[in-house]
Length: 318
Image (cartoon, rainbow, N blue to C red; front, side):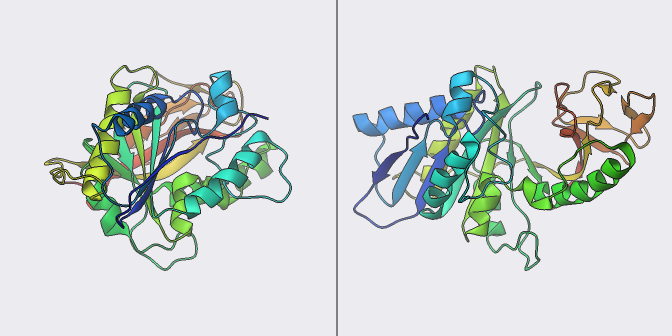
């Protein structure tokens, strides 16, 4: 069993308790490299924690990281919760990680993505008292999102995933394909942090192999430290331009023969009724409305998310 590692810095002065995660998915190492850089600067004294607490986890999923792939036994960033009966390696990670998250107020989770594209930040829901993801810190998330150094923000994750779960139940009844239909399956690190009363952002720092991605992650960590006043540095200026998008649909892959009609990149625009993919029986999957393709995954396993669709979101645009 591979061990878990976190690095904690605590100032004598009170302040926000921040946790930063890298390599929740083992092949997404930009956060790992950025955390190592920040840690080296803190140890050398060129970066000084003046208030609060900073905990960094350079490799959140050691098994997946060692195997150089997205997952170990399963996706850590789905249905994240402690369990009394751990079976898979990621269950053991969750039993260690979830109590660690509970010790903090703010989470910055650093990721990368498969297809080419510009970095973007994923934010949580607007303030609400609903049953799925009640929340009260939307303004704080939005303020930090504007200061991470990116120009695109995406929201709507958990609601879209829950709606997709209901549709997958219908797909499963008609096709016989085994699909996960639990809406809580969409809970990952940020959703779990919000369920504890904290707030959090996921930063997608670029394509997995983009040499600039670690710099994007590093800048985000330092900007977060400055914005939360954990270091003595000016609050970064908010982005002058931010494109806001909201996820509105998730489409599963139902058969190994399902294929895209062309090579898609995240945030490629599509118009209503435009073909996006084709099922193995020749049925076309068309865009239900004008919008954007997000997270297209040509290697998606049968029964898993294949791609998402998004629309413009006035809430986050500026």
